[in-house]
Length: 115
Length: 114
Image 1 (tube, each protein chain N blue to C red):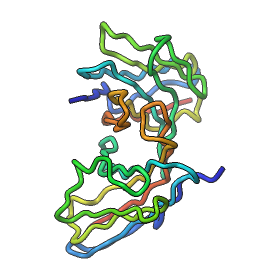
Image 2: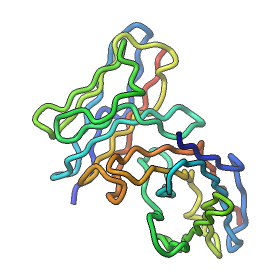
Image 3: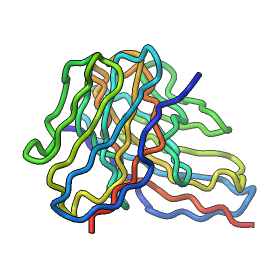
Image 4: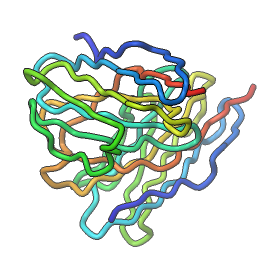
């Protein structure tokens, strides 16, 4: 079974530029999550999708971050404009359903460096 | 609100020694508790989880954890460390409801020496 795919793996941009990350979840997984992991910290949930609808985006900085999951499969997370403090690893995860019984499977992440 | 505290950002053990990684949680409802491992440049992998029932939970790679409600703890142990156990370990909590939001601790980096 293929795991969660993410691209790119690494991205370096200058502040005020825009950037987009892509995630392809495990086939059949209805729930998709984006996490931000700043160096030295645990992952923090940014947004959770159930199929193509948003379940929780309470910690997403909506003035600069946006995410979509068209057709309930792939997802894109965008930052525009980027700030220095956005430097982090962005992890995508998916699960079969949106409840705590279901394991979240994580992708390898995209490491973003903002200069 | 839920929170997780992991005591010790770095733990070093000798190969063959006991591994003990500490996790304390705060939750207003019965928690679901998780331990994840993260190897360099990889995503997180679930080691084990506690939902309900038996408080001693066994996971992959010989790890286990015990849920102690009175101590609000969920410490991770392994009787004998192996070099391949060197990684970052994260404890996480969710409220066990229909939403599956995980709140993670800050992580503990395990170093295994010869």
